[in-house]
Image (tube, rainbow, N blue to C red):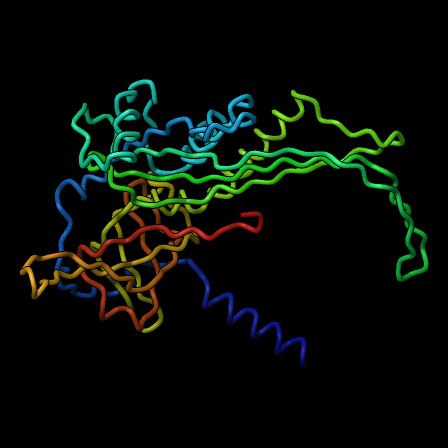
Amino acid sequence: MKRIALLTFALAMAGCSSTTIKNLDLLQPMPLARSEVMPSPAELSGGMPRVVVFEAEDGDIELARKARVGGTIASELEKQLASTYVELVDRKLASKLRQELALAEMQGKAEYQGEQVADYAILGVVSQAAVGSFFSEGQQYVDKKGNVITIPPACRYEGRIEGSVRIYKMPSMRPLATEALDGVVSSSEETRTGRCSLGTSGADQFARQAATRAVARLRTNLQNHFAPTGYVIEQRGNEDQVVVKITLGSRHGLKEGDTVEITNSVRSINPLTNQITVETAPLGTARVSNLITSETAWIIIDKELADRIRIGQPVRPRYKKGFFE
């Protein structure tokens, strides 16, 4: 009886978390009011943002300069961004922009006046680069089962990179986000001599591997920073299920089971300046169903959220960090 009860519970939970819409035609259209802030024609076009990634500054750290850590960081950032909804711009086409960003950091220059080759720019800075080696003497111990475990003497090697990556919005050159870089790699090899040395090439390699690891830890944050934005266009439902159609599809990287966040935008007036600003707040999350086309998808929402859905509300994918990030 206990096994049957557990099976019944598991099936019930599976039904609750299902992303399947069996028959869309059986779901009744639900009238929607317009959002207080509707998307502009440019926002509705859904074009890929253009992103340029510059070589990270080595911070006058000799190891970072010799190992070309700045180039490694830039290349790895481009690899991570390749899986997002962006268009990568060749950094050679934006050399003037690179100079202007440096001036903006030092002098607080307001806006980039050159050719608009990118919508976003990314620049990293290395604040620490270190490698090391040490000898670990062998040892023996007895485990819980009485087995004798022998750990042979070995050389231990480690590399570490620290720094930051900053994302700028163009042409304002306004910093949007700063992400910390922190990567550590290590390895070991058995030895009987007690002499452990990386050498110049080994040290450079460990520094680059640590840089690669540091950027890999930013994968989810980069995905969320550059997640495409779609908008609510339709809602249907019945007693069992409520679904919403959005202007994101497989072309934007969406797939069944993905989590998306619905937000609500409202206008707010500052009583001191009478200036109107737009404030955006999370409304709730939903899961992408099995009904996906290149340009659109149906998402499954909680029924409690149905009365708060409006045409034109922004929707963006939301990604969770993996175990090693």
